[in-house]
Image (cartoon, rainbow, N blue to C red):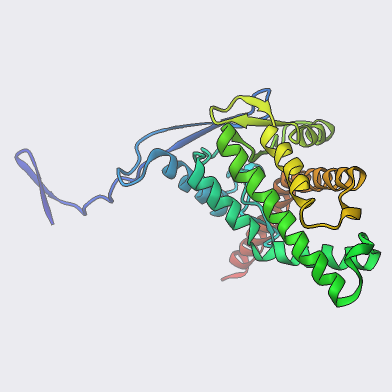
Amino acid sequence: MCVGVGSQAQSAPLPDAPVPQVSFAVSAPSDGAADFAWSGSLPDVLWPQEAEQQKAQQKTGGGDDSAPLELHQPKRILGFMPNFRSVSGGVAPHPLGWKYSFGVATHQAFDYSSFIFLGITSITAEATDSHPALGKGVGGFYAYTWRGFVDKTDGTYLSAWLLPSLLHEDTRYYALGAGHSIPMRALYVISREAVARTYGGNQTPNIAGLGGKVLTQVISRYYYPSSATTFTVLASKFGYSVMRDVAFASIREFYPDVAAHYIRRHRAKMARQAAQKDSATP
């Protein structure tokens, strides 16, 4: 094809369409949150935030060894455990609001893994006779299961949707990430039970998260027998809920490091095998 430049014409292939370039900068300030900055041109069909998320997902899932794997929070940990309320470092988090938070809470409350966990806890509670008034056997299992489902659903909607939307609190999990000592990260995990963020990104007491747990226990007084609604029993259930959240947050904090380690080992192994194959090829 002839392309004219001024008075000259030369035969040359058409150049490829320009590819938008985005550069990422990630830093970890004192509050443990990863700041995100982007620069460069982006397609007009994408809002900047959507483009940032798309590029970050390509970096963490693509096969680029320079990708920030330690910052990536998958939607499911080990392909099973729901992780919908964690934010990957280096990615602009989705804006919060009534509609978005309701969708996330619904997704989490009715995820298939939640029912598996509910079944396990109900069987355990029936086997250990946690609340004798609920009975034993099939009837007892049913009594524990539907009450456990209401507990779980109430807690999810209160702590992830209603109270955060009313108070403008961001109760999602932002990992402190690599670069800090394990004891510091462990203390950070525990502190997230008491500290959340505002919609503007400032730290604030986790009133929505803790308040949702308290209200869940208050509401449970209407569908549990009186022997299971004493202050001691409700306080124990509240403490268990807090400890469960700390345990899950610990997994969210450290899982990206473990996953990054094994992903890099796998990539190195594949690279060695490819090199050996190339060297053996005449």
